[in-house]
Image (cartoon, rainbow, N blue to C red; front, side, top):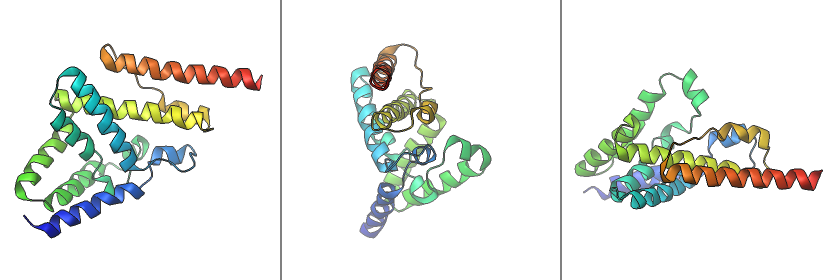
Length: 190
């Protein structure tokens, strides 16, 4: 093991704590969450969903923690930015590969395989982490709305929809809270 490589990896990953989530910046959120903030709650949601479903939580937590790691080098891109920057997939793969190359070979292989699995989105683990990612976004939009964020601009993050299972139940409960909050605001301002 190269301890300097591991430290370099951790330093690079630490940059995620200072990178604001671009989508929230675009809709005018003051002091938006960082990519690291997002990864933490995504990992927590993924762990809970995984444990409820009896999946391999270790792999899923690892995937959730690594899913946005490349953003430490390329920044956080919104879907709109990705649509106009067609090279983003290659840039993301290159950044991820570089960061993993700082680690011992066995971890490089393991983590690059997990990130590839997430990006392909075909395994049950990858689909679960994508679900956790969307649930975190939905929760965050509601939290920003309750903190006085522009609800009309935040609506673009409310498109999340799941069919059946615990994910659909969580989505329903989260959206119910959004509706209750909006109704209370209308009553208090009316």
